[in-house]
Amino acid sequence: MAVVISLGGSMVNPDGIPDAKFLKKMKALLKGKEKIGIVVGGGKIAREYVKAASDFSKAQFWLDTMAIKATRLNAALVAQALGEEACPSVFEDFEKAAQASRQYKIVVMGGTVPGITTDTDSVLLAEAIGAKRVLNVSIVDGVYDSNPKTNPKAKKFGKLTYEKLLTLANESDKRTAGTNFVFDVVACKLAARSKLELHFVGEKNINEVPKALSGKAHKGTIVK
Ligand code: UTP
Image (cartoon, rainbow, N blue to C red; front, side, top):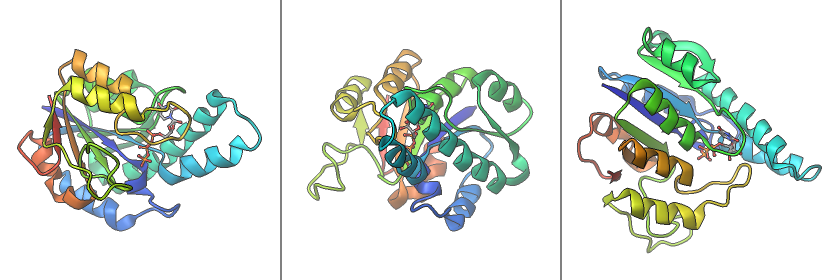
């Protein structure tokens, strides 16, 4: 059984400095038998570079292209941190990643093309390697009815349908370079077409990654 993890860049590199402690923790949490594909996000480095470049150019294509480089830098760090079980190369296309996944327990990617996010890349990689499940591991420990960073009364969903996730995603998806949203709307639609289970876990419930990897109940959000 294969599983894909969409790993938020803000977990790997919260403030522009890589979090070595988190990377060690992640390595320990991925000790199970599953084959794993990991797509790493851009986090703060992507956002800061997009912000700086936006003073000079508003061309979303080039801003996205720059942000993709940040995702690949974070991905290179993750591939190194995971040691021998992970292929040391960071893949830039799905076919090569899928081929390598036959030899390695773990393959790591960053972003691929402008206009999408690593959520969509994760779902596509899941389709490519025949994974049945995608874990979204980010700062936020599940899907909420409003932004928990700004609304202390925000309520976390335990379970959601694809339709409900798509509605929430549509409300927050601004589709501009470097912006954060619950889950990419394209990723929602692709997950629904392939009936991929989506599991949202985060910083607060990070120890539940092994449960989510094996499809067991946890304190985050499950979409199916
Ligand atoms: P992500 O938006 O996927 O990173 O990619 P992230 O997971 O949010 O990082 P966190 O959640 O803040 O920790 C960062 C940016 O890279 C570009 C987009 O501009 C996106 O906003 N990107 C990423 C692409 O253009 N194409 C891709 O395939 C992936």
